[in-house]
Length: 310
Length: 291
Image 1: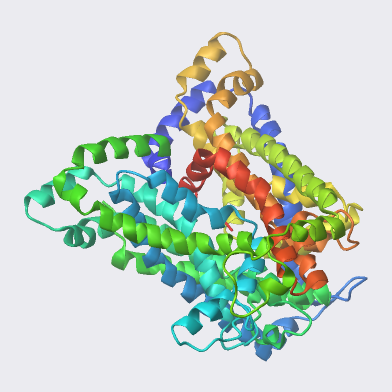
Image 2: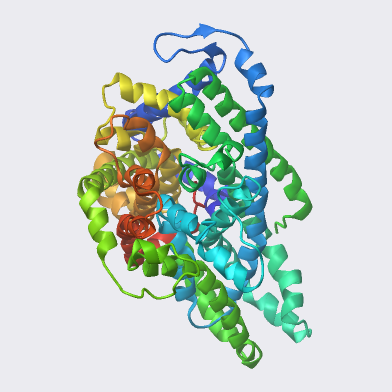
């Protein structure tokens, strides 16, 4: 969709038109001014601040002192940092497992002639429900002593667990909630992709005797791959930034599992805004940026192997 | 754009809805219904729990329906939480942020789409670069600015940084670029200046995108936890998310009360969603939601 508008011919056309239209450049600067001031004050400058502070030792009050890469060397030697990185990576992988589910469900929704709007609304409800609120509901469901999940498992003979109080399970438990919460968004993006697949391809292949499953793998999946790519990129970026699910589902006075279940952003929040060690916090944030950039870059590299553009 | 796709997609599908695809349809409905039940089950459990007593909610095996339905959970929640104050804070921050976002993004989006001035591409590149940086990287600096302007524990503190988003500017730019230039030329020949053209001709035509941007911004604003947590150190002027997160410490395992609070706090946005589904879906389809 976006590519449609920004494709080179379209861009050239607008440029030529805009050229003829031009008033004084003053209007341009005037209209950009609010955005520019806000962006510099709240994004560019803070970005530079964070970058600078990551090389400093910053006390809670007063100016910091330059300490070179000390924060980074300390970070790389910190077991809690590696633990947080592993947790975030595991959470991201779990969320990626939700993508095939979304593809199948999106394809099924496109197949039905009635009830599509209803399904979309039902699948989308978790997206528009306060993350803090759904975290509380899931925390209740996961409760080790009287939670619904353990009860349902006991009916089929599976022993119950302390899902959010035992560090063996926490990331998996939170990951299931993450999949559940993001499914609606993925369905919408994939649904838009499915609707742009020309219908006559299916008709032609039906005439050739291809069944539905075959059509799904031969037509739907390849033509949907740009949308799938978008969904995976967005999933990885947002999964690496997960914070609130951990904050609400795991944090309590006596939950010892939290210590081993922190994500990168949780660690960042704790260092920068609870302990007020901003230099160290800034270094965590910069590493997060590098992790996200690396993950995105790898995906763009890999897309040549599986994303189909016509 | 999404609109058009939806419509054309639908007509084509009706045409293709031959006997072959009709036959298998109930199987698909069964699969989708099972999935939908799984998706909705936590909400149903939440609703059922609200009307149980705390004792009933924490017994094993659990009861499905409340044995002795009570609305005590709501009474406890409203009796002990400054809910209306928190609701006011959340709503005020939301309105302020949405208005600010629309004004800033529409102005800049139009300039980037239609006006020519030196440095335009460089500036746009700068904005787009910010789109790729995770939001946590800005928090320390944003906090300092808010603190230095003595805005901690105020509603503007909650709303201001979110008004400026590269995403909003990008979305509005796309919208303005897709409007045929003939409209502007006509206005210009009639002697309208850039500001009049923008206000009377272009803005009304970009209304669908503005609506999509408004609902997405509302969603971010209403759901945000980390930023409000940081800029409300004193504790009054806390939005609903922070209040709800704190509820857990207060009520521990009084789940009926917690579930009631979770429901009441989520309801406003769910209602907005049910009323404006189309805007939500088109906003997300055209962009992808940036968490």
